[in-house]
Length: 359
Image (cartoon, rainbow, N blue to C red):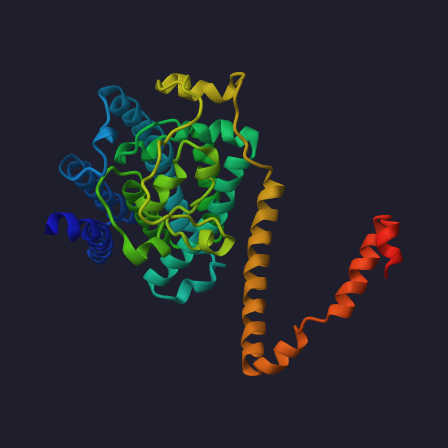
């Protein structure tokens, strides 16, 4: 049936392209970057919420009234009031002033607007990737990030369930550096458009299939595995808007023909109420997950890159050997006399005198 086989592949590209086209059209007709960015985001968010009702990924992920109430408070107070309206108004105003009065150090400033926005997405996601990994490795940061992983269901509205302190850290990564560089407000607003709309898709309970886009964007299919209840399974897919850094550093994970297990955190007693969630990171915790230190995460990334290098070198050696198989065979030929001497030396080292004397 086409609703099951075609529509899941269409929701994401169609709505994302519509949001980007609306943003460009409103800028062309003189709308402010703030309005041009957040009006399409609001429309896409409402569309996803409506589609979740008709085409859910899992029926058991349908939220209860208490879930909706808590997530709406987080969405309004943390995502909108704290980080979007007040911050965005100040940021875009300051950005416009700096951009107009001082030359920008933003190197791609002469590029077309879409190229500048994509460059900002890649740069921000590189910083956010390591911040996100640090939140899963550091005990202190995990206390804050655990608020985001606390829900045992995924749907569009819990995209905003972040502790205000963690959201401020993210703001320092995805906005402040570009603000100081004097990047044009249209570029910053364009980044927020892609980040916000993609975030609603990432956390949605909408039946989505990304195909090859799973190797390009931070998709709902990959992000659901990141929210797995098992901490070892959840240590993957840290990307936000793009998934490219996960591919590079070896943390991309999307098993085929396998359903995402239970999501949430291991602590069943973790609070669900808004005010308790705000206070929980500062209370003594009996069970705090920290999969590994940040130093170990860097080491894991280096090991992953090393293994890929060794695989490449081994492939080259096999290709070279295949050119002259007889020569390779002579090198690998079994030599009983040499192997016997090696065995005797090993026996002597292990103090098997009787065996060594036979040699």
